[in-house]
Amino acid sequence: MKKLRGFLRHYKLFGVASLTIVIGLILELSGQHTAAKWLISIVAIVELGPLLSGMWQTLRSGNFGIDVLAATAIITAVLLGEYWAAIVTAFMLTGGEALENYAEHRAKSELDALLEHAPQTAHVIRKGKTLLVKVSEIHVGDKIIIKAGELVPADATVIEGIASFDEASLTGESLPQYKQSGDLLLSGSINIDGPVTAKTTATAKDSQYQQIIKLVRAASASQTPFVRLADRYSLPFTIMAYAIASGVWVVSGQAIRFLEVIVVATPCPLLLAAPIAIISGMARASRYGIMVKTGSALERLAEAKTMAFDKTGTLTSGILSVDSVNAISPFTQDEILGLAASLEQNSNHVVARAIVTEAKQQQVKAGKVKHVQEIAGLGLRAQLKGREVLIGRLSLLQDHDVQIPAKFFAKSLNKTAAYLAIDGRLAGVIMLSDELRPETKATIDRLRQLGVRNIAMVTGDNQATADAIAKQLGITQVFAETFPADKLRLLGEIKGRPVAFIGDGVNDAPVLTASDIGIALGARGSTAASESADMVIMLDDVSRVASGLEIAKQTFAIARQSILVGIGLSLILMAVFATGKFPPLAGALIQEVVDVVVIFNALRAHFITPSAVH
Image (cartoon, rainbow, N blue to C red):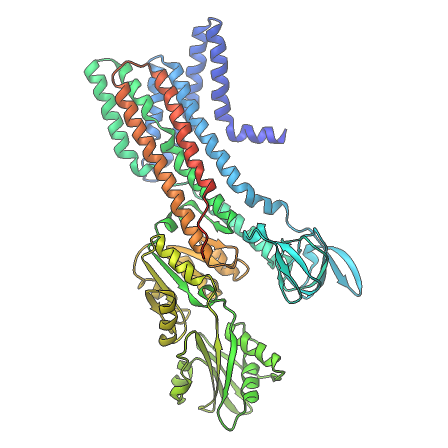
């Protein structure tokens, strides 16, 4: 019963039109022609109500829709007594809307499934006992057991056991992911092997699954009515249709000739083919772990001429490792590493994490340092036993008149350096590296094949290092030595519009919002970045940027093809029916066939398969 009510709510106009046709046929066959005429005419006018309301809303928003042709056809048909042509036209319109609704429902069903299968309970170990608790009662640091077939209730790190996990609903990755001690488990992934014990790294509400649900809800809330791609063609097409129909009427002196032309000038493809293609394209993108929040975002992506990448964590793995610790006499390597770790231990910056990790691996103890001051985008400053200590970029130390020997400039490929100074003198340099993602070069090449004219890179690295990386990747525009606050300003300097910006960090959120298309890489990363972006790539794979672009381009190619075919066939039919040899009902029926063909062509977007990036 619930499904029936839902069907009637979504498809009631189509249902009424269908039922009216059936009853009308029965009345006609039983000889009740007058009753059939009045019933069909009244229903056709009633069905016109929502159409006129939509036309008014379109006009109020400053746009012009092609709906006016459909309204003219129905009204003219009723006035001239061609009631069957009127109801068939109404059937065509409501049927097209029902098909659009079906496509939208099918597109959202995959995302809605997330809401229905959210983790509800968890096995938590407390005081040596395993308790079954609600996911809302999970705390950071809890030990949990995930048995075979169970959902991971909260983000966690494996501490015991080995198993494979299905992350397909989260990341689009179809193959099970092998997990062992030290590996991250994403909430919502499914254990398909034996039990594992893990330590939670986030509460359930802050975990991956709930972040995706928030994104789904935000996408649903932000969905605005589609600006119909066809409306760009609507004014000239409408003028042409009225001109042909009016010309035939004037020449023949018969109003019925006007209707015969106008009834085939109400193509459903022009009204619905583009939205159906766009919705299908968005659904297809979600199957590849790419969540596009709005149809307009997908359209802007399809038209993107420039892609700007934040380097760290996007083009690279984002996981820095210490290559070398260079100590300047009288300091030792352990002293420099220990002092650096002491300053950086409370920072979440990737450089800080790498230094602290290296200190732990080398069993170098990090001491407690009070009054650590962060200098945004540059580094840290602290007072230690009455001495001023600086750690950070080369420019930070140079601003404090610290002399840096040329041999310590991080000019080698893909190198980052943390400089440490004590009381205005260089004490040591820690060299770090961040490897390029294995798929990065192939992704850049694929983007060029897809028509992206300019590819830019934004990084805090020095110019020499940035240029070397850009040359290796074939990137044409480089913005080096940038601070987080510079990104918005640099956005205006990037050549070629529209511009898509791809990033993954908290400091990328403002530029993701301000860019023409903001793309957040890896929803398991910064929540702020994911919420600010127009598109979120759930899998930590930069090649999905190229996949998303290919889906967007193919989607809009299909949409435009559907529109142009619809216009072309309508023009041919107008020419044929201008001869006056065919009745209006025949035109309405032929238009039905054309509509079905073109709309099913639009549904091809649901089966787009982007090329693999190698």
